[in-house]
Amino acid sequence: MRNYRLLSVAALAGAMFASVGAAPSFSEPLKINHAQGVTELPGQPKTVLTFDLSALDTLSALGVEVAGVPEANLPKSLSQFAAKPKIGSLFEPDYEAVSALQPDLVIVAGRAAPKYAELAAIAPTVDLTTDPKSFMKSAVGNVRKLGEIFGKQAEAEAALARLESSTAALRNEASSSGKAMLVLTTGGKMSTYGRGSRFGVLFTDYGFQPADDQIAVGNHGQPVSFEYILEKNPDWLFVIDRDGAIGEQGASASELLDNEIVRQTAAWQKGQVVYLDAASWYLVGAGLTSLQSSVDQITAALAKK
Image (cartoon, rainbow, N blue to C red; front, side, top):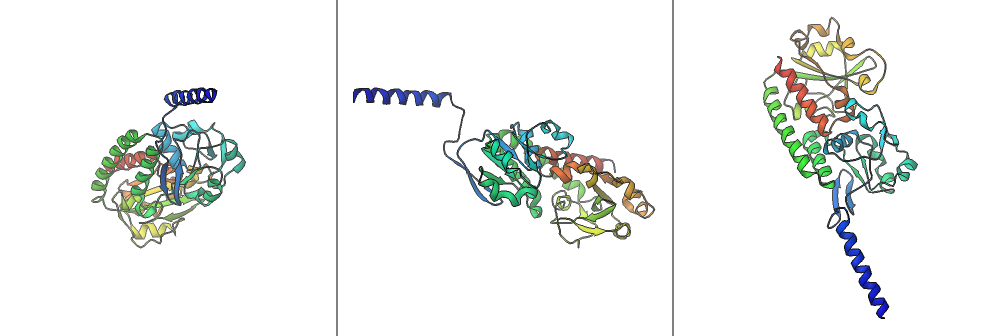
């Protein structure tokens, strides 16, 4: 009995010593609400995998280490992750690679969101898909979630304060800058996007008035022609070159739009055709750094009018 008591005291003392030297962890499990439910994290994740480039962009901005990323045409802003272990594509996980890394947290959104259940069976998984109908609110909420998960609330709030201030200034300026149109080019074809679409932030949060307020909402936009652009005659034409974003060969957006029809538009004649950072808009989207750079680019374009 005496030996048992001595052993218990020694074990207790060892446990107390270990707790003092251990890394900080949640005093209780952290429950994260996300697009596909609630995920409980027992402690601050150490090994993090993300299939979502928006989350990767935000984690990079917050100084959080990432252990695995998808095989993708990473933009220059995320090129430092090119050498990280690959865990599949933006759409299709490599489940063996995921399991081998023994993650504490897996992040999906948008493209990989349909694989949530399979990944959640391997490790705690959250779906940070943004809501296009309230894009900025949803994106900001995801930044705050990542800040909470990794104890980076102060860093997140400082960056968000700047983003929200600059977005408000842009909205105020854009509201009186005339009508705008956003087109995405790919493979020599074009589509346009309006309110409530994946790129509807231009109108709902950045404040531009749409040249056409009847655009059908769809993930791939509404197919349009050069004649359509001239008919709607926007004061501002914002362009996303999808092929440039994903590294595909072909005519660039600037080459495609430089024709006698588009040259007749108010946007062209005023010098108000803006080629958006395609990687930020098409690939990264709701990442903290990407959001700020998008606001900064459009604000700079308006300043030149």
